[in-house]
Image (cartoon, rainbow, N blue to C red; front, side, top):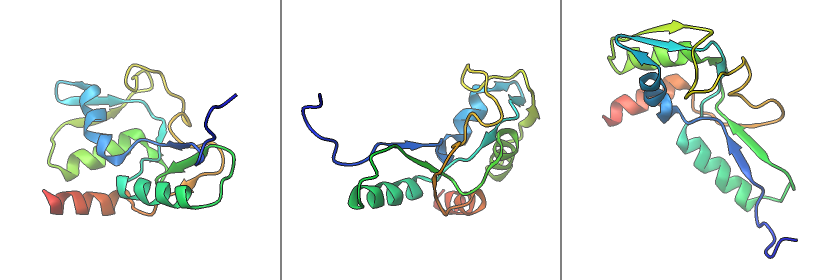
Length: 134
């Protein structure tokens, strides 16, 4: 029995775009970054904030609200694009044996499997904004 009722539905988010550098660093071996081929649907924090506010102010759904970025892309491709955009010379290699923060992942491990609220900020938009703020 809950002492206090939940006021909003719980929200589960995919990884934030800001984690791309940490993902690369955690899989770096010298000048090479080895990543598994699973899909990533990373989301921008501005989208997270907007969706969380919308969920908090909206009607309860009595279930978990899944949120994700607007694009599904292989993890290795997203990280390679990020590294290129920030001028990092490391090479990204797709490696089915590589782990993601120590865990083996399947193709759909990092994306929502059912209905999800999608953000609007694409990787390219986020990269432009990130470079402009630097």
